[in-house]
Amino acid sequence: MKVSFTQHLLIDGANILHAWPEFRPLLKRDRAAARSQLVQRVSTIHDSELVRVTLVFDGRGTELIVERPSGHATFSVLYTPSALTADDLIEQLVAKAADPSLCIVATGDRGERETVEASGARVIPPEELAAWVGRVEARQSARVGELRLANSKKWRK
Image (cartoon, rainbow, N blue to C red; front, side):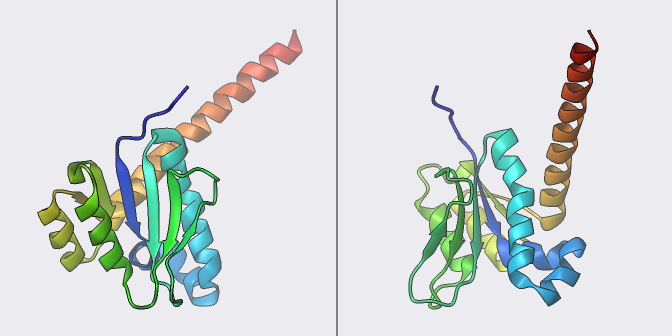
């Protein structure tokens, strides 16, 4: 069975890390751990909402680095080459999308917002992304609770 991912969520990783209060202390101590936790948190949107997710971070090397933490091509973490910013890459991805109106960009950067909106994408601020993740996590938690209850009843028989 082929699953269709119609929407594409592009996340300005550094912008979100700095905007979400729960990441600020960790970001000061261990930037890689903060990035890893952000990847884990937004993976719930990919897995539960069937939304293609791409997190973009500024890189330091000479080449674009693409990671697929879940092994799925529809969930990617990109590190830009040093000559390109995360904002630039997100703007390029939106501009080259077959249908930019299916792109949702999560950022608090006003300049990036204006550029991608001009290309036809929708922009959500960091707080809206956090609320989205929170709703998905709550639904997943409720579903796990339902499964535990059903299993408990089954085992008692």
